[in-house]
Length: 100
Image 1 (spheres, helix red, strand yellow):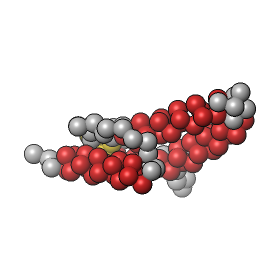
Image 2 (cartoon, rainbow, N blue to C red):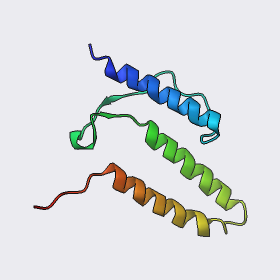
Image 3 (cartoon, one colour):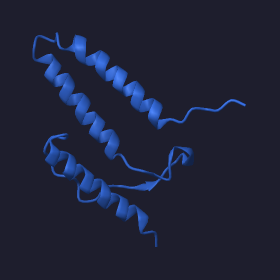
Image 4 (tube, rainbow, N blue to C red):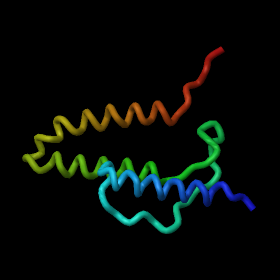
């Protein structure tokens, strides 16, 4: 029996609750069971969970909704910032291929 995935799920749930308490995440009830499984691509890490992607989705949704309030003019600022941030998150998630 592998005890690591349940421990990682507990750590993820605790991290969500700490981020909510700090005001970094909006208030919502974390799911009772957070899926943690072996990564399909071992070069990207040992385990994978959709929690980070869901968190980024919440951030993008809230930013776009807030940008639409002032007659969609906020999109002129929010979309480039989200694009830039997404690019940097992508570069951190996907390892660079080493030539040689």
